[in-house]
Image (cartoon, rainbow, N blue to C red; front, side):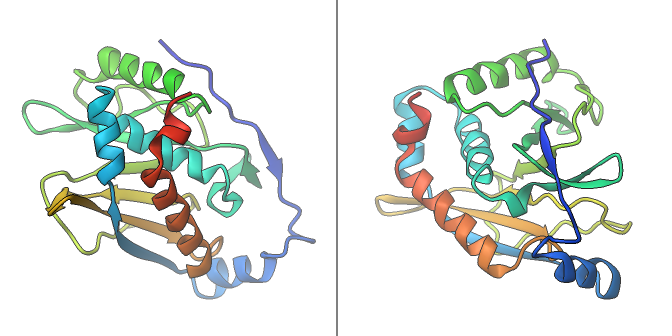
Amino acid sequence: MTEPLNTNFTPIDQATWSRREYFYYFTKMMPTGFALTVNMDVTKLLAWTRAHQVKFNAAYLYLVSHCLTDHPEMRVGRFDDQLVTFDVVHPSYTVLHDDHSMSNLWTAYTPEFTTFNQWYLADLAQYGHITGPMPKAPQSPNLFTIGSLPWVEFTSYTPLPFTPLNTFFPVFQAGKFTVHGLQTTMPLSITIHHAVADGYHVSKLFNDLQAAFNQPATLLEK
């Protein structure tokens, strides 16, 4: 199964782009990215997934993807060497096998969670048992990386590329749940290229994510 894939985008006119000087500075003069980790309250989201017998990871992937649709700076990429803003970005995530090896899958984002969840479960069924780095080959230029390390509680996580960055999408990593009385928290890190986003943009995104985690029914029950 290959679900429908939205790859629509709007070209960025760098002559009039408000971020033009910052983009040049953070890609040419001082190439820089940064990372931030926040303890997210997932109490209500976890309760919702258990009550509806939905995999937490499906809800997590969907809600992050959904929030990114409201943040164009997080959807800046390249298409045929043209700098563009994609309409949506699709989650590219890892699955773990019995031998502790991992594989990379992706599921197309769609606004309806019920449909997204069906596609996610279908992808797991078709590709989740196949070993190798990418059993479902990436077929889209607008995939963003999102994962989880459910075995460890961390205070920071930063991917370290060994080649110059050529992508501007955020990278997410979630950690182990921690229970504090009636509250459950989960560390969530983002790593982002400074060419497209500042701390202000990342802060707004995390605030939107927390609001979505606090009211999961608003987005997931449709």
